[in-house]
Length: 458
Ligand code: NAD
Image (cartoon, rainbow, N blue to C red; front, side):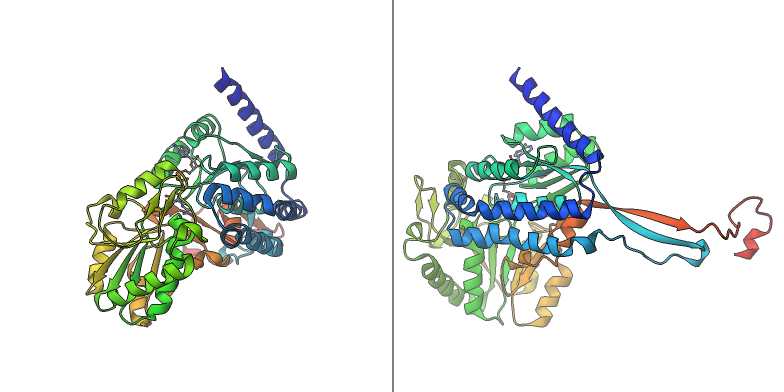
C-alpha cells in the first residue's frame, strides 16, 4: 500500500515536470540565467550548513569541503553564467553548393525531463554540478542524492525546495536500489545522468535500454599512477599523497595503485612517508584527515590490509571509521586489492624495469577513469598518452584535471559513457537539432523526376 502511494506521488511529480517542460517555461535564456543565479545564491546562504553536513557524513574539513565540493560548484556556476548565451546560440555551419540556395543551422534543444543520480563520496558537487548543466540546457530535473551521505542529502533537499518549484527541480530520497528501479521502470526520462559504481552503472544502462533512454555514466575503476626514473621525486611524492589520501582515498579519480621505476622506489617510499606525516601528523585520526563512509566499507578496506606487506600505516579504529594512510607492497595480482577499485586510503606499490611491464599491469584493469604519470621525459609522456585509453589524467600531478571547466570529464569503456563539466555539461544536457532553410526565389529542380539525362549534369 505504501509503495503504491509513493508510486502515485512520484508519478504525479514526474507528470508535473513533464507538463511544466512542455509549457516552454524553461526555454528562454533569461529564465535559465536566473535559475543559475538563484542556485548560486542559495548555496551561498547555506554554505555553513553544507560544510557541517559534509563534516558529519565524511569528517571533511571545511577547507577540503570548499576545495573539492562547494568551490568546484561555484566555478561551474560562474562559468555557466558567463557563457550561457554563447552556448545557446545556434551554430551556423556552411552548406554545400549542391543545396543552393539554402543555409543550415544547429539548434541546441533541451532534452526534457532528466534524472540525476549521485554517489556518496563527493555527495554535494556530484549532484549539483550536473544540475548546473541540466538548468543551462533548459531541462526539468529530478535529483537523487546518495542515501549513504544522509546529512548532505537533507541539506541538498532543503536548498532545492527553497529555491525551485517541484515542477522544475525536485529531490527524491531513499535507497537507490528501490527508488531508482521504481522511477526508471515506470516512467520515461529524457536522460539519466548517473555517477557511481560500475555494477550499478550496468543496472542503470539495462533499465534505460528498455525505454531507449540515453544515459551518461560516470563510473569508477582502478586508476594507475606511474613514477618514471627521470622525475622530480619530491613533487611526485607530495602530489601522490595529496591525490590518494584526500577524502581518505574515497575519490573516483584517486591514484589506485602506484608503479615506480625500480631505481627510484626506495627514495619515493621515504618521501611518501615524509609527506603523510607532514600533511596528517603522526596521528592522522587527530588531524585534517577524513573517515570511511560506513562500517561495510570499513570492513572491506580492512580486509585489504592483509593482502600484502604494509610499508607504513595500516592502523584502524572501527568506532571512528578510521584507516590510516597506508602504503603496501608485495600484493598479488590475483588479490581483491588488485581486482577491486580500492576506494580507500590504501596504496599498493609495484616496481617496474621496463614500460612494457606497466602496460601489462594496466591491461588487467583496462580503460581506467584516470591515469597519472610523473616524468620529465616528453617521449615517455607521448608513449603513454598515445597508447593508453583512459578517461582523463595528469602529467606530474593528480586529480586536478577535473578542475578545468574547459576540458571534458568522463570515462572510457568500463569507467563510463559520455562526459561533462563547463560547456560539455551544456552539451550533455542538450541535443543538436539540425535545420536546413531554403530560399523560395530559386529552385534548380534537379532532384525531381523525370530524370532522363540528369545524371550527366552532375
Ligand atoms: P553506487 O553505485 O553504489 O551508488 C550510486 C547511486 O546509485 C546512489 O545514489 C545509490 O542510491 C544508487 N543505487 C545504488 N544501488 C542501486 C541500484 N541497484 N539501482 C539503482 N540505483 C542504485 O556508488 P557509490 O558507492 O555511492 O559510489 C562509489 C562509486 O562511484 C565508485 O565506484 C566511484 O569510483 C564512483 N564514482 C565515480 C565518479 C565519476 O565521476 N566517474 C565520481 C564519484 C564516484
